[in-house]
Length: 300
Image 1 (cartoon, rainbow, N blue to C red):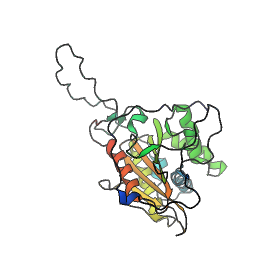
Image 2: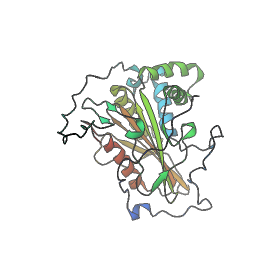
Image 3: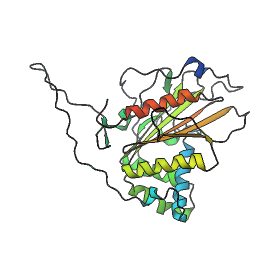
Image 4: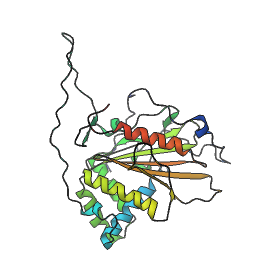
């Protein structure tokens, strides 16, 4: 696989604090104080950590909806059947304000969203900068912890999304996912300073109607399949969905999965942390990511 881009991002503004002292006051894990410590830096080509930061629920949801489509099941069939081209009509940028004599005119934002729902700029700029109290977390499998995927890497990434399907269905489903027109993908992981929680955010950019349908199905699959616990709501984002896998009361680690559609971006968050998971803090991070991508109009 071609090398992925994973430079450390430049600071993009003052980080927002998340959570409250009450929300983050979780008990110390028994026998595993460094359960979510970031891995030591490794030389290029060195083995990747065996444990990814993960977003297994979303990948399983993709496999589930794809299998449902091939079997003719009604729910979520639009994810594969949609044939749609985003409106790429240029949106007029606001007129630049007058600059002092001799000063260069402002060049406009480096990233943001057009009023037609199309985002522009690097994925690593669109991803939420590191909030206060967090550092870069562990790698998410082979994709790193702060990465914008190249086109070759996206092809490998699509392979990962269908690997749980029966062999005779993988090519059909992968071709259907390719038909959605993946333009880009990016990932960043965030580890709480107390090492009790890791948050992994993914952005996937493809045509808007497919983004909306996939988000709707993942939400329905998480809430209506009976396989998951209902998660918290995301204030101000009614279409966002959060759910949790089944867990025994004595389980030391809990997980949370959230998904949302913002224009041509599918936003996925996977959280792993010491139980009881500070859900309000995790949801605050997800909300901040969604607001960074807000529509309409270009926003920085």
